Length: 134
Image (cartoon, rainbow, N blue to C red):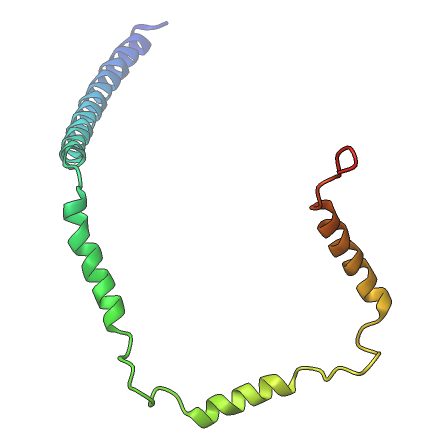
């Protein structure tokens, strides 16, 4: 290497050293600022966590919420909350939708037999077994 090349390398080395030192100072400053921000945030969160919420503190808030919700329900008025004719029509419509049973066609003995057998078995199972002729 020539003298000129060595001097260029020294000059570049010094320049890089200066730039890297500036970068290091900037980086360390930013890290310190971020560490400080983290410490402040942790301190504020610790303060919040140290304060315990009690039932006595929550009860008024919940009571107010319930009171607000219940307060929106309209107060009933005797005989005026519904129209009896509308209710009667709704009942009549519901009853009209029930199919009319047809004699001998709605249910067959074969449909009833398994239910009766089960009921008889259950009833007989509750009868105590006789002991020695008694």
